[in-house]
Length: 238
Length: 226
Image (tube, rainbow over all chains, first blue to last red; front, side, top):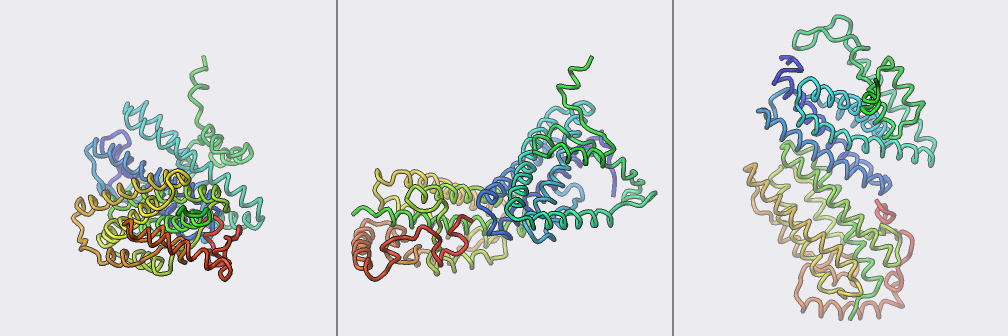
């Protein structure tokens, strides 16, 4: 196993490969939801079907960029962590809470920071635009999950218990995989401390995805109040 | 003779049932298909079928039925779809769906388009023509995928089985309009039988006298829009 520096060619390809693999996982999860929950409201099923299409576009555009940079599918190891966690949850609200509202919302934070890093530090505008385009779609995937969880919960309060159980399950899984202080990864590098691994919160996009102020505040606390500053705000500063 | 509003609603509702089943079938194949290229193609076709089902479901509302009114297809056709869904190999999946099921479904949509009143039922015709275009594109993409991946995809006997199923609908009145054949003789016969069936059944078969506005028992979960 090898860990490539972010600013190296191989590091950039590994980043694209990793995101492409995550999009494949997201496609599989959304498709499986259509199979596992045939009684879900038609409007929600339409959103999931649309998400499948979106994820395929993300896979194709990331694959295209990967090839443009000399890479190929299978060039790096992949993880199916999100599939393994989400597919173990047996109800649609729980899966939306885990996959869309947690993993994809987390991806909004990661990709939001990545767009800036790729553009400002790697000076790779094309990759930055690809990631920015994907980010816009992810906002909608998180937003429809937030809307449907609220709607399902308003119709049946027990949905909130299922969402809480799913979030609890995810936190237990995360705890099992949490690196211990000083633990090294497969490439021989010491893992960063947990607080350093939490990405800065993409407040602007989380608002677009209809997280409310209290929810964003809670996420900011978890991230040590680190957040991405919207571009226009940054530019307006002296 | 022009089909009744009820006949047209049931036809749209039956096609909707099939589009939902196809969406679920391709969705089930997506995580279980190892080839990324095929997986991605399935993911794109999921949304095609969802949009088809959505358009047909909105059309049923215009035909005096609940929105997303859905009527299960004939048991033989459902059985065929279930057997296709159970296939495991990527090559046999692609051959069965894109060389057998979809071409047959295209013919059935075209049969309906040829049989219905082109002006009175123009909204349905418009939707179905777009669906036919999508399904033809899907078949072409499926065949190209078999070539691209050099998959073992022997010609499927399912095409003959699909053609041998006379009707999509569960009963005679609308079955003619979505039959496997597409000749004018079929429709002459079909329309005649349709009129006879509708007339003869009006006293003995409530289903053909009026379609209930709520879910029919046999429509099960699909009747309310899944």
